[in-house]
Length: 364
Ligand SMILES: [Zn+2]
Ligand SMILES: [Zn+2]
Image (cartoon, rainbow, N blue to C red; front, side, top):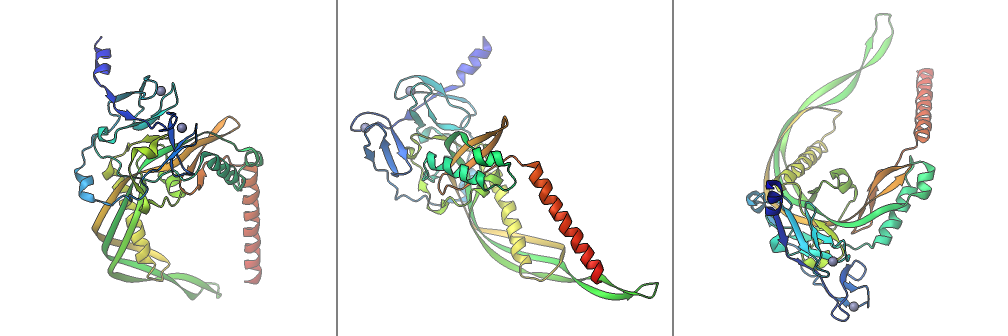
């Protein structure tokens, strides 16, 4: 069977590692609370070197990195605890053995292409992440009351999610035309007067320097860039150097997206931010045009694994994804919307608008 042969020839057996308790031999996992490896069986802990802060990497490394991707071929591993053979999913570099529950972590020198060089360890326990989701749901104004009261996260799992972080200094020159409104009193044909809005345009040009630090761009399709940004700070400037120990007990994935593709996303964020910083120097009402030329210096990147809890809430047979920042506990995600609440708020808004119109004409 040629098909079977193709599948077999592309299967690679990976070398994985697990951690065993030096006292009782049970499996050890990384504990966010202890910030160390913990034997859940006898309570013994084993320190991890937390002092190694990951350095920034020169941008050229990203340019020269091969596009070899983990998961373009099928990988398997034999569990280091029970020996059962399991297939890694696309991108997975750390996975729980379905037979004995032990997390097996791929030896990092077996990951082809660009390897993650840093990681932010989980600092929030799963139980706290779950509580944070419930508190977050209660504060969602437009969510139905029943959802706010009963929201319960399901299948909440901690996953190290790949992300690129970019630093850059920029020097930009710009040229543009902005406009300011002014009003003129004109006489109408029936002899009355009225105010007419006009625009006075003026040219701007100059140069501006900006610094950008740790712009985080998602490298996984599991989370949108909006949700990643919503999760806020990961303290990524102090991320640890990548080490297998942090992954014990957790799923981890490598980048699905190309590093340069991720930089293009960062570039859009940087350009929008430069435009905002230029415009903030002027008083204006409208932008006619603004052309900006930007040169980069000191471009660096880090390829990080970020700690994120991913799960969902179930409401009326529909699933709503939720995400928790595993470093600071912040929550984001989708909630159902109460049509009635939206309708009431819209009606109140319209009523206020109508009232203002009446007042405006009454006093005019
Ligand atoms: Zn033990
Ligand atoms: Zn096993």
